[in-house]
View 1 (tube, rainbow, N blue to C red):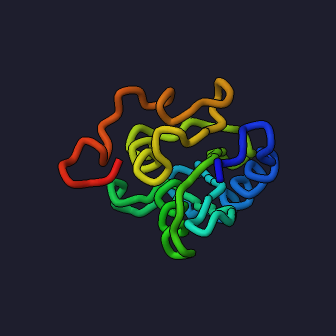
View 2: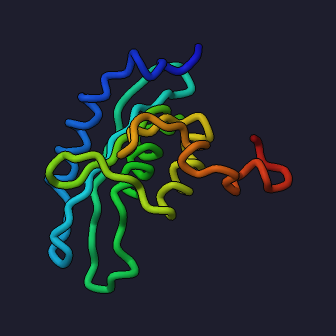
Length: 142
């Protein structure tokens, strides 16, 4: 079964889930709360929503982006593939994932993952063109 099309996804529900996650962010240093939410298609073709928030640390380099928490939730809740994704700030405004997180999203959603971006709906292939991914590594599935 194909992934739901962009038109049939409840994007507003994903934004609300991301905003709720952002409200739970741990950001005592920057004060910048970030939340992310995504639709997941499991191996059995069921779908669910996963979410994550940013978690800062006094040692800035070891802070976790919201997308890291989202991917952890993806695997902790049974795995699957990300199909549709949104990231927001604490006010619920759509923001772009950083470069590191774009790579993380590519790994767990693939080139066809659809992101709600600051410039509209884009596939991961459009957001991160010519990306290095698992398909470049010998012996890994594409």
